[in-house]
Length: 293
Image: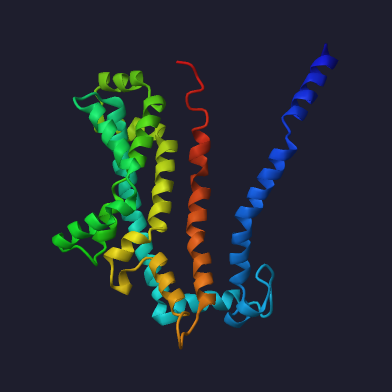
């Protein structure tokens, strides 16, 4: 009996291994890592060696630290200003969008009110509309309000996250038992106190997911700041690096592609850190719903 069960386990483990799937996944891994490898390697090169050496291998001299210093100090340290602007847009925009999505999704999941089905349809419609289709109406609206070329022109539109609202709504329906909320109400806990002391902890994996999506969207936001802002001191990193990249085009251009590449490398570091910091919240939510109530 033991021999047969052991043989069955070995057969099952062999049947789960697919050479074709392994090859396909390896191709996808290489496809994903090669651009990152090129970025890291290119950030170690000078402007001259970028065009005179092989792109996927190092060359002399090793200029990574010199490129970082030049990036941070070029044009009176405008890169640091762009970094600060991006952090402001992410903290205010993505943070506000996450908070609003958590409050709205929780309310829609755990409270009944007239028109709830219409709200659900409206949210799905908002998810289906691409952001570029709303760019011109948003610009005209903010132009009439006198808010263009201000930080509010980037922050306020970022507060609206229909997908985040829908995600928290769906997650809250399963993650928060209704019996737990009823017990808190019986004990005299108010709705806000119940949300911030009980529900918020249960929603942590879902909120972390919405936060990460919002952070990435705000960090990589390009089109909205492009049409809303005209002052370089208000640019985020996406617009600023593109401004540097355009300096290398045309007659009499002064290319600084080594600084553009190094700036791009510095730009992805905070996003990688955000992924690493939020992993524990996803892992803590893997067992949600596994216990029968």
